Image (cartoon, rainbow, N blue to C red; front, side):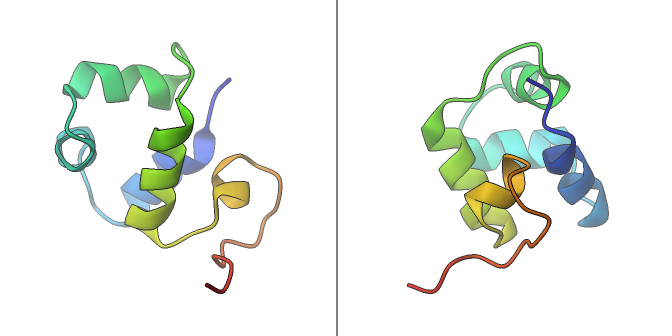
Length: 72
């Protein structure tokens, strides 16, 4: 599954793949495969990226176009 939104969010915030991979504590190549859809993202990565970009997991997964995270 290709997650276009994680690419778009990264570019919009002027982050490199290495920046995001470092945040996730993984090699850049692993993150690159998530971004390109070559590898499925585990739930923990989706959750971490939602926190990193301050968006909802539903937004990352393409279930909504509203990036607003849920109220805690």
